[in-house]
Every structure is written in structure tokens, then in C-alpha cells.
Length: 234
Length: 234
DNA sequence: CCGAGAGAGACTGAATACGATCTACAGTTG
DNA sequence: CAACTGTAGATCGTATTCAGTCTCTCTCGG
Image (cartoon, rainbow over all chains, first blue to last red; front, side, top):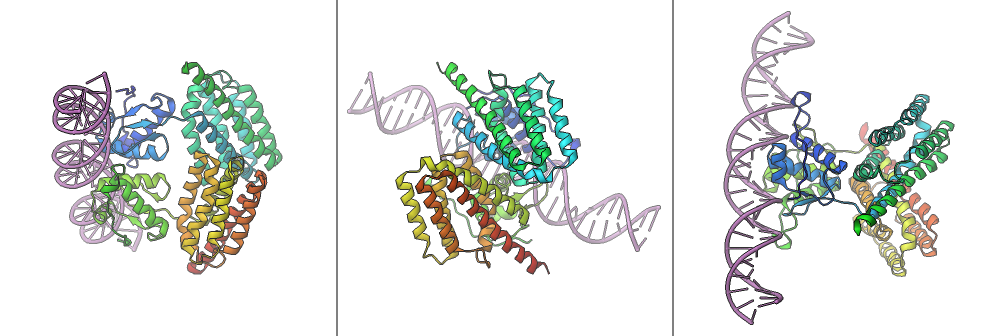
């Protein structure tokens, strides 16, 4: 079996009766997939996972149903489930669609942004400037974008964007150290420009700026992915 | 119990080993929700559903996990699951996002459309003209739009649109008979206009036309929903 | 040497059984 | 009288068990 080592799972009975075992299993598997701990095409064996987590197969099955619905794994009936890898084409699609949606949500956010939100954005932008660690930078970057998305007050669109982010997450993390992927200075400039548009109340400008920003990020990621495919392919 | 009458379910063992019981249960429940057979807030009791479908609770639970991920039901731990009703605000969001995505996909489809696809579209448009039955018209309308979406060759975007359509489906069906909702003539004209743009290779024109078309449809639906809320509310 | 078929092992799918949790209602207490 | 506690019934969550399906290998016939 090509199973990957997973850290143990423990339910936290103190913190709620609101989450069930399947939720914890789903969280753990999702994190393992998004972090890259489970490789593309890694096989998910129900019994092994159950043993690993110290639970029966039933909650494992439920967790896998959910991950399948989230698009993170492929599970055919009567066959081993596998971690769904994304082709570069899919990653590009993902970012194109996300750029579109996030641009729209930004436009929508403009009339709903308060002075406090703008200040929060400036603060978030400043906070990420000195950060050297990739993972930390990514977390702060996500927080920055989340401020805008939240302001749009569009739960539907927000859920869509989060879904797309979730599916691409593994590649962002795996490749964030790659040549030309992590560009804090350039991204910072784009963030500042976005804030300017938002502060000025220029919805269309903000929309275009965000759409370009996200698309640019996606293009960098795909470009690096191509080099990875080239070098590992031969 | 406020359970609604559901038609029986039967697995079809001849047609595949590729689908499991949970899939059939999910399909049936999805259809019941989308058709309006199960009202907003209708309670889903695992044991009752299991008895109704003639299966155990395990596949019912798995089906419910999936429907929850699809956004069709709400399920808190240790509590009865309920059919998730959409507020008019959510429906509006849904159509706004869908309009955006479908517009983008249309734009993307333009350079990929063949002569045959254009002809297929003209044929689909002609086919729906004489149809009086609402349900049948809706099916043909979906088929028309599907031709364009398929041509975009963007699986990610296509899945998003389908997801949004699925969630709004119940209201489309419930309200398609409502005043000002079903507008075959107007929709037909819009369809013709879209075909013109596509045939002319005008991607931007097609994008705008589709976006407006979808948004218009959503606005009609929401407007009727408001009258429903008014009349039933007092 | 190659391909079709049988059989073993592994794995998934579903039912049953049991334990945990929630909700509603009755009784009690301040 | 209001708020709280306790109990019964309903419902959910999980483990265990058995049945069905798939895959791989080995054999046998051509």
C-alpha cells in the first residue's frame, strides 16, 4: 500500500457535542490532502484509515463521501478511493473562475465597505510585508482577501470561492517555494493598488485589479507547475 | 412527523455495479427536494427514510452527507436534518453568481464553437418555441444552455454552474407557473440574440447577452417570490 | 507462448445491534 | 408562579458482522 503517514486524530469531547467523528476524520484527511502529505493518486483504504484513526469504517466512509463531494478525492463504487490530482489545465480553470468570482465579489463589496474595513485591510497589508516564511505569508494573504470577501455579503459567492481555494490549496502549498511563484513584493504592490481602488470607491477598478491579481497568481502557479512536470517527467 | 410522501425506490442491479444504495437514495431525495415534494424545512428522519426506501440507515446517512455538501439540506449533529430553504436574497445571489459564471463560460465557448454546435443551438431554440408545458420548456431550456456550457470546455466552471442550478431548481419548478416568471417569447428572443452573437464570433457580446439573460431570469423569479411571500405572509 | 477461466485474498457495501445524545414533558423547588 | 431538574421516548452515532464485488494470480487448454 502506498499509504502516507498521518498524524493521529483525537476527538475533543469537551469542546462540543456538535461535531461527530466523521467531521474530525474529514478535517484530518482534508488537511492531509491540502498539505500534500497525501500525494496525487494516493490510495485511501477504508480499513487502514479506520485503524489509523482508531474508529470504525462507518465514519470514515461518511468523511470520504464528503471529501468526494468537495472534489478532493475520487471514489468509484467497490474500488479504492484515490486523492484527486489536478492537471495544470484544471488548476488554470480553477484560478480563472476564482478570479472572475472574486473580482465580482470585490466590486460588490465596495458600497458595503466601512472605514474600519479599509483600515483593517491596510493593517493586514502592512502585517504581511516583513514576513519571510511562505506558509505564514500565505495565511496572511488569505486573511487579507477574506476581509474583502466578507464585506461583499454574498454567502453563495463566498462559498464558491472557498471551494475553489480549497481544491487548489495543495498546489499552492507544494509549489509556494518554487521559482517565480512566491512574489511578496509584487503581490504587495497589487494589494496596495486594490486598497486604493476600494478606498476611492472605484468598484470597477477594484474588480479589475482583483481579477488580474488572482489570475496573475494562477498563471505563476501553472507556469511553475509546468517546470515541475518537465523536470520530473524526464 | 411532517414527512412527505415519497415514491418508492428500487435499485437496478442489472444496469451496473457502479452505483451504490446511497447514490440511489441521494438521487431520490435530491429529486424530492428539487421538485418541491419536500417543502422548505421538511424534516428528514433517518429511520423513517430507511424504512421508506427499504434500506438500513447507513446508506441514508451517506446520502444525507452528500446532500448536505451539495447545500440542499442542513444537518446538525444529533438533530433532525431539514430541507434547506433559500431566502429570496440567497436566490438573488445564486442567480447573480450564475449569470457571471455562465457569461464567462459563454465568452470562453466562442472560439471553441463549431458550425455544428451553432446549428444544434438553432435547432434547440426552434424546438422549444411551440412547447406550452412548463416542465418540458424548462428541460429544453436547460438543454439549450447546456450546449453552450459544454462548448466552453471548462469542467470546473461547468460544475459550479450546475451546482448553482441545482440549488435553485426547486424554486424554478415551484414558481414557473407564476405571474411573470415563465416568459417563453422574451426568453426565445434572448436566445436568438445569443445565437447571433455566437455565430458572429462576438465573444464579448455573447457574454453580456447571456449574463443579462440569466440575471433577468433570476430577477423575474425573485420578483414572483416576493409576491408569494406577501400573499402567504398575511 | 499466449489467452481464457477458476479461485483466493482483499476490499467495499449494507444490515444489525448497541450506546450516546437530544427533546419534551412532568414534577419539584425556591 | 417561574425556573429548574429528572426521566422517558425518540433519534442519532458508531462498532460489529456478514455479504457482495473486484483484482490478481495461477492453471490449463490451445
